[in-house]
Image (cartoon, rainbow, N blue to C red; front, side, top):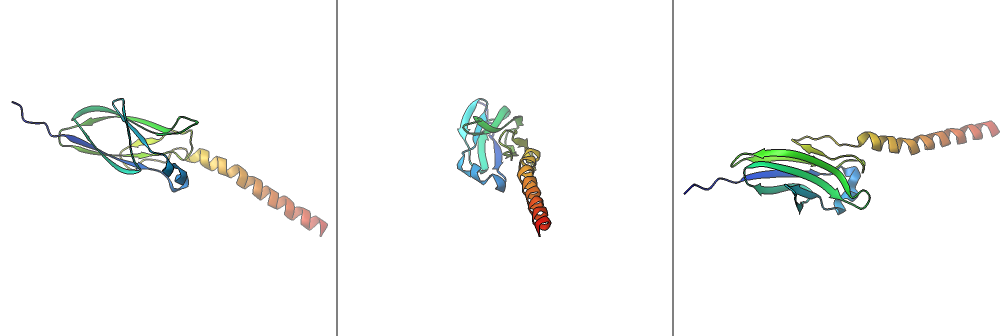
Length: 137
């Protein structure tokens, strides 16, 4: 008879940026070796047998159907606790980031660009109003 092999653990810290506060209403989906399980924001402790595992994380949504998909192949040794971090993207159509902490906030450039356009339009409008008021005064 063989002695039992100590189990391994995956500790997955699922994060969202404060700017994506509405994402708190979405339950993160963790898929291990093709088997989906609902996760939670914050630390998820997942016991696994030692060996190779395929990890996928995303946020279910309407359009697109998956926000921030991210994939990683992990190797777990007996008794090991592997700590990983998943960060949801700042832009809905960007990929999430998954790996050892700290991970980057993907989609930052798209979000800044998206916010810069209306901000630039407001500044231009304020300048045009100021010029119009000075020319009539």
